[in-house]
Every structure is written in structure tokens, then in C-alpha cells.
Image (cartoon, rainbow, N blue to C red):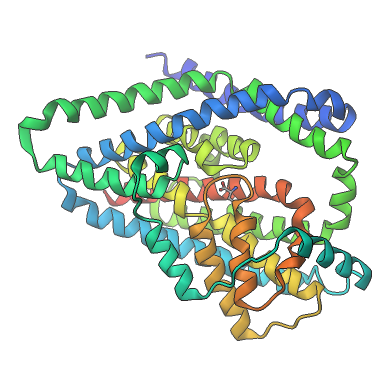
Length: 417
Ligand code: ASP
């Protein structure tokens, strides 16, 4: 209908969200206690988004498979999707390794006393982190695909088994003919109803996002830590941000352009609301409803590809997390004076890729799975304390890159359908 007016409203919304993030940070810096009082508003918005994740994933994946008509048709795009996820994650890891080896943020920046203090503190807090071998990690990843209880997976927003179930269930429906036409129709209708629900929630986004961001930054500021943390971990944070920027502004755009001939930067603007929501929530899962809405509505990617590429991507495709895990592990090694050779750096690359695949799309999940990377090359886990203070902030940037990678993947797979 009123195409131009509608587009105008949509880009206005992105602008409103962007402005509310800037305003939120300013308020947090100058009035941290006041900013903290917005916590409830932020939590409300986050809950609304999270509430939609499980129903949306189940209906959209099923609806996507039903739309393909025949489960065997999933093979090609499914294969491309997995190939894309793996290739971009590995690229991201290598960018991280290159940047951290060139800038060397850990070398000589942390004195012995700080190292000892950090190690002592963390040793007390994190006892008994098991060592992880690559085969144990692979076994774990395999087990993560299937659940013994669908309801508890749904309750824990454990998306991977839900996606596997939805693919198989919908695939089965496609073979059952007219006797399941009512349930097939129900799934399609539920899916579009959920999408409309998300549009409704997005109307609250500028306010919700303001509350989320200002409360979190305000908390850091009133702990007196925001600028202090940034200056202490400055070079490390900068290294991570440089790596993420290279991946976000050069690698992904180049791949997107190569396969789709789309203008990658316009694509980023189209996905703007999703990227800003990712920054604000630090969770690709919570952002998923917005990512899907933007992909279909603004980036004009067909629901056929968004329906399964995005939910799967939000769960297993984490370029930003992989890049961050590799960078952080090498930073810690540099800081404690461990010299990692080529083989060990390769081990970091492999385990960072696996750790990113295994990380859930929730805030600071990457920090937890990083234990895998540290263990693999024998870096004492206690030293994770060196990067703890700034993780909540870097998490936002890497989540944004995760969501960008997923969205570009959907656009690329769309071309192959
Ligand atoms: N917060 C990230 C995400 O949801 C995961 C992580 O790197 O911690 O995508």
C-alpha cells in the first residue's frame, strides 16, 4: 500500500532505537543511579522478546520445511547453510588470531602482582572446571542435537533440539498428504500470527532498549568501573573491536556482495533494528524475533530461507564469539608470558570454532565455553579473571556481529533456493 510512508516509518524506528542507545549511554555516564532505576523496564522488554523465541522457532522452522514441500529439498540449502556457518566462523577465528598476534595486547601490559591477584581470586570462585578434549567436545555437540525431553528443552530455551525436532516433524507432515492439512495450515497461521506479535513488540523497542542499555551501563558506571575498566583493558578491548570490525565491515560484506550482489552496507541498514537489538540485549536468541522480522520485511529475504537459516544460525553460527574466544585466549597467554607456537594457535583456532558453535545465544555464553579453548592449550582457567570485567561490554559487540553473520547467511542461502 503506502510503500514509501511505510519505509519511512521503518527507517525512523531504526533511528529512534539508535538515538535511544546513545541517550541511554549518556544518561548512564552522568546519572548512573537514576539510570539503574530503568532496570525493570529493560527486563520487561527482554522478557517480551524471549517469550516469543520458542514459539517462533518451532513454528517458523516447521513452516519453512512445510513451505519446501518435500523434506528432501532441504538437502541443498541446508548443506550450503552449514558450509556458510563453518566457513565464516573459521574466517572470523583467523582474523582474531591475526589481530591479536599483530597488536599483542597482552605482552608486558599486566604486572606480576595483578596476575597473582586475579589467579587467586578466580581459583577460589571457579573450582573444578573439567578439562575438555576435542573428542569430548564433539561428543557433547552431538548430544546437544537431541533432547530426552522436549518440554524441558523448551523451558530452558534450548533451541538446537527443538530445531531438530521441528525439522523432522514437519518433514514427516509433508509425507502425510491431506489427512494432516489442518495441522499444516495451523502451523503456517500460527507463524504469521507470531510475526505480527513481534511487530507489536517492536513498537516498544526504542523505550525498551533505552531501559536495557541505560540500566546496564549505569550499573557499571555506579560501580565506578566503566571508564576504569575500559582504560585497564583498553588495548585488549581495542584488539577485539578491531577484529570484529574487520569481520563485520570487510569479510561479511565481501562474501555477501560476492554471492548476492547486494550492497552490503545498505543491507546492514535494513537489518539495523536487529543489529541494535543484538547490541542492547547481548543475546542472539532474544534478538531472533527481530532478526526474522527485519530479514523478511526490510531486507526482503524470502521466508523460505529465513525460516530455518536464522533460527539455526542464532544457535550455532557465532562469528563474533569465535573471533573473541580466539583473541581472548591468546591475550591471556601473552599476559601470563606463555608463548604459543603454531600448533597451539591452530588448536586455539579449532577449539574456538567448536566453542562458538556450542555457545548458547545468551549473554556471556562465550565466556563459559572459552574454558574449552583455555584447557585445550593448557592456559590456567583462573586467568579468565583478566577479561571478566569488560566481558559484558564486548559481549554486545560480538553478539551484533553474530547476528550480522546470521542475516548475511540467510540472504546468501536465499540466492541458492
Ligand atoms: N552473547 C552471545 C550471543 O548471544 C554469545 C556470547 O558470545 O557470549 O550471541
